[in-house]
Structure formats: C-alpha cells, structure tokens
Image (cartoon, rainbow, N blue to C red):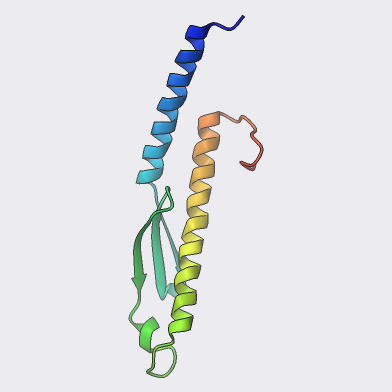
Length: 109
C-alpha cells in the first residue's frame, strides 16, 4: 500500500531538485567560437545567449574591404549553435546526476 504522506514528501523533494538544477543551469556558462575566433557566443545552461562578440576583422577584412554580411551571419549562427550544443551537454549531465543513473528514454546515455 502506498503511503500518501510519502508521495507528498517525494513530490516536495522532486520540486527542490528541479529548482536546484534550474539554478545551476542559470549559473553555468559555455562559450563557443567560429571562424577561428572571429565570432564568439557565450550562453548559459538555460540556453540564453549572454554575449556575442564579433571581432572587427570579421566585418571588413574578409572580402577586401567590403563587409561580407552573409559569411558573418553564417559565423554567428555557427557559434550560437555550437554554444547551444555545449549547453545541451550541461543539461544532460545535470539531469543524469539528479536522476542518479535512472535510464529515461530521450535523455541519451
């Protein structure tokens, strides 16, 4: 027989663990670059873009003086996607640690 008091306690613990994971993800910071450092994206574990740095040489030096906007856009997308992938790894690691090795479909591992 299931004790209803234990269920309430377990739900409370699950909520506390979720809040802790969210806090940790908000504090985690990842960085990724593209174009040999021409563009750098900094993101937190919640996949919020915190900073985007574009080296000035990426704006004018790549196509003989006139800006190559299309290439710069590609570099930005690449850096942001790479940072997002790193954030995904942090999320996956945090969830696996919280679940203590419990295998849940869709979480990998």
